[in-house]
Length: 181
Image (cartoon, rainbow, N blue to C red; front, side):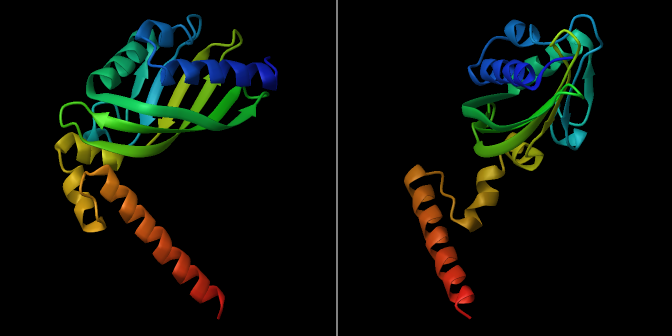
């Protein structure tokens, strides 16, 4: 059994490798070679080729990460809020990144969750992801930017900042007026 601090270090090392765009071979080195391994990104299978199915065995996990690398790129990935269950050998964490669907070049900011199950050797046995499958699907279809337009999205980062500031100002006004009553 691994201690809480050991599991945290193992999970952090894996997440850092992924955030740093390490190659698939390096990513796979974090997975068990003595236990059956799997990678599952939860969601509706019809929305993207990597969703809603379990990729079994090292070849399956390699296929999952290879599919991700072919279809998506990402920037500014970071992980936080690690929660460790040493008795169960599990670590959950929150991740954030900007994802880009390679073919359409449409991007979105996403917060996602990982659940990593570790074997007795400190290797990942089960990798699970919960993410924004709706944004991925719309970006895949080239429709994400169009869907955003009613909310002030223009694709211009300066406009995006201003829309965000306007929404925050409106929210603050609304909050202060309702709390005064």
